[in-house]
Length: 484
Image (cartoon, rainbow, N blue to C red; front, side, top):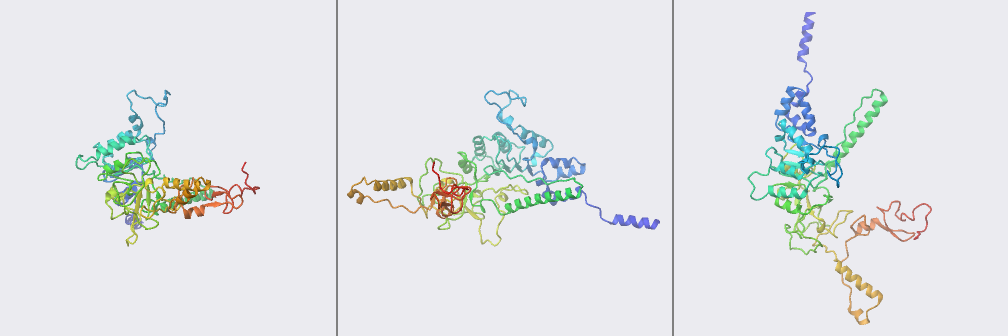
């Protein structure tokens, strides 16, 4: 009996024990890949579980390098303005000395104070504040306050942000006479949309077989949604892979000059337009361009990412190409990198071909530089060297000549001497208001004529229409089109 007990005890000592959470997190490679996916509240809760975990999390470099506060409930400010023409604010007690900045940035300042008390704030290098209440004064503190060491800041779709004051702070921080090594901020996400929140994983405590099978189905649905989102992200919805409009929000006046002044110091998730009408364009003065009504600034922020011209396959100013263009000419790509706070990694595309046969490049343009030369359906466009759209004056002159010829108000001698202006065949037209401008090939596929009434209609935006009948004539019981 004694020898059997001794042998059993020996086997128990020789068999490896199951690893604990501390053993798993003690591996720095595993720890650095896990912590960017966890909110800071979860990390602090894990640190409060034991002294060993607390020491591991607080003393391991890089644990709090990436902090995302978008999911923190205390950071949300879902309120309207303080004063609505004399209305009484009853939800909170407001101090007479409370400023608007203190009110709207109060939740984030409170979080910064708390994590600074734990010695975390100075270790944050990537800070994500998308969709939160972020004021220009708070961003200015992140720029100049020595407590912060943020290198990449994301404030996409931020609320209560005074962009005018923010531009002033950025341009002052990037002034030519600034101190060496300042500002510490090297990347700013502000023009794009905030990332779509990940669906929470389904949990179940059911014990019956039917409930368990239903829970399994729900889990698989969530996994499918996550897999679909990862697949869409892997396809590369960025400036290099996606074509069309990249920035949907309106660009406030002054941002182009701000990007120009901060070019050597801070990268943004947008770049300047390189069209030949702008002073920063390499093709300035090489090709004729039409003046845009209301155009005042010699610079503009690019809102479209285009491929080569549909005719020549290039552009007068050339391409913005990863690996060939200067680092200051490359945009930050969404989402912000999880495992790095280096702006060079934030400008690196996801899908880089190792063989180098397909270079990653695009043509950044603003709307004024592709007006009347871009198709919203197929994303094709024509450059200034290959196509010049007819001006409004030419179209009006041609229309006036046709009207005069139809009315016959000119004499025979004047009619012979008057020749209609010769215009190039337009490549871009707008037959449907919702489709915006389209090329002739896309118009032929979407803009049809009804065989019954002869009226024109759009197959994409007129619900109930068919390839032969409009929505009115194809309705049940309708064979003719009633005008009244």
